[in-house]
Image (cartoon, rainbow, N blue to C red):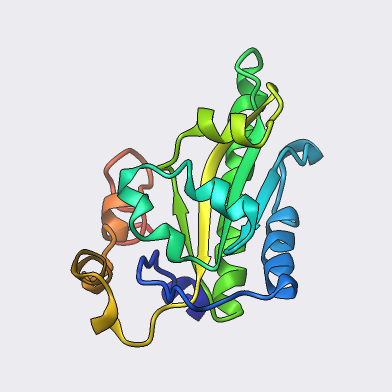
Length: 192
């Protein structure tokens, strides 16, 4: 596995004094723009704020309680939106898949530049829609925090430090990858 994937994790212990250059933030958002897209739809749109600007402040204002304690420490926040077409289930579904692909590429690009990306669903989508005049045919799906990790973890609030220090775990491949039938491990089965 590539080291960017293996080392990726969603940190909360961002350095509130760290900044991100416009060039680096542009590169990260551009990585999202270049993500694969179903049928060449390219439905993904971004609302981009750097700490200290009005967009960032408005984005921190739509965070829910669980994220409002740590996410304002990020150097940037990016609201990732896509089309809202519940009348077209196929387009509606694939537009959401495109957001996931874009966010994933942005996280990896952030990692490659020495930053950490943390995707969040914990924000008020209706408030974000109102704050940024997002058109009715668009829907905000993910808020991505991008920041530099604090060097001295002892300086972090205890709850953030405790969450960041938890071991990163995932289910085993046998629990998530199947072949032949559901539940039959794909990679340890006799004919795998």
